[in-house]
Image 1: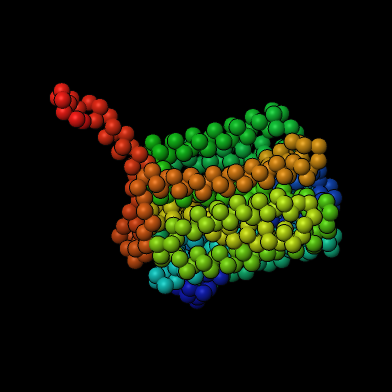
Image 2: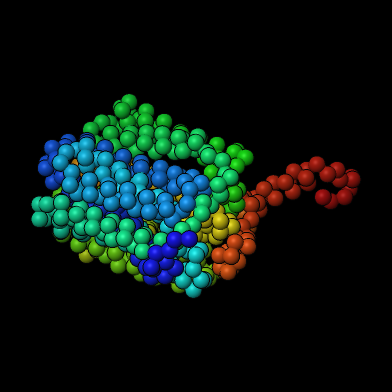
Amino acid sequence: MRRGPLAGRYAATASMVMLALIPYLALSAALDPLAPIITRQLHMSPQTMSLSSGLGNAAYALGTVLAVQLSLHLPQRRMLLVYAVVLVVGSVLTAAAQDAAMYIVGHTLQGLATSMLLIAAVPPLALGYPRHKLPSTVVIMNMCIFGAVALGPFIGGVQADADAWRPLFWIIAAISVAALLLVLLTFEDAPPANPDAPRDIPAILLAAAGSVAAFLGASELTSHDFLDPEVIAPLIGGLALIVVLIVYQCRAARPLLTIRPMLTRSIPVAGVVTALFAAAASVSATVLTAAVLAERYGPVRVGLLYLPELGGAVISSIAFGVVISRRSLHFLPLVGMILLAVGTLLFRFAMPANQPLALVAAGLTGLALGATVAPALFVAGFSLPSPSLQRVFAIVELLRAVAAFMIAPIFAHFAATVSDNLEDGTNIALWVGLGLALLGAGTGVAIYALSGARPQAPDIDAFIGGVRPAWDSPPLLSRLRRRVDLGDLDMKIPVPEGVER
């Protein structure tokens, strides 16, 4: 088997994962202050710019499912090399773009490659090394996703202040090349995961059509009203196709995604629900408040106001690494949702010009994001056997992408149209975000309580070894259903006259 000179070395492999995931995620968070400059220099309309972001996000959502299918039938590390090449091509096309078409193609390839790299590289990093490496792995994963996103507004603001965008994009391209080099250096040929698995073309088509339609519909909100056919038809149709995908996978005899075990067990359902609510609620606390602050301050000042998010993400990532093998892992997403609610509330009172309060709110939001989505993802993954981890990551990332990236333009449109000015509309949206955070926290707690689930320390050794899930997860709502069944049975049992039931 072919091996690179750094194959099997944890530090090199972890560095490869970091460099592979950071470019697109950081760039997506940095685009808002750069969008006017890009549109002016490439002669794009704001609607076309929004379309490019929508296609990039749709490709990210699709890539999660496509990567699982390819890993079953093709050599996994060779495909990782292909994904890294696609990321480099997309990054170079975007940085060198001379027109809208070139930019859109490049950004779409970046989104597709990033999600496929995540699905192909992160689970082997978590499972392919000894147990004591797992805390470092989860810290790295959290920082790659949420640290990069938290840093985006600052680096975008600095670049926008210089009235340029290509230098940042070329830096992103250089990082992509470095990721490709590390993929080559750490190469260790691995066979397909399951060549005998069926090729689930309907699942791929449903994921592709649903993602593209839903994100295109949301992107049209830049120039259309919500109920216009250009928006509502693809938006609702795309969401319906994603629902059909979930139902189809639940009913399939040999599904591509492990949806049925996730939706019938209490702990993974609680984890997925928490991740979705956190992704949706965080939009109002970041994207919308940044738009209000941008009306008063320059891009660098706005970026600095959101820089505490990075510090919060670092702290919560370290906390995630500390609790990954402890019973307290179950409580981290709940704490994160509460912090997100508090951060959203503080943002509400910080608008439009209370900078100290905005700094505190940004720090709490960073803490919240690092403590919710990735921990909830592992809470779900630990509830199933380790060979399913890649598929668990795929479905959670697909749904999280829909919750976060698609809701952002919807919330932005809502804030701009629900009131006569953006500030009032954003305040209303922040109340909605606060409600989503509290609802997500309450739903997770209710699922545990009604299912009889209890926080447990994960059996990491058994999980990594593929022996069994890291903990026992009771059936969804089993305690509630048991009470209903006992009540029905009690009503059916005849009781002799004079005897108390």
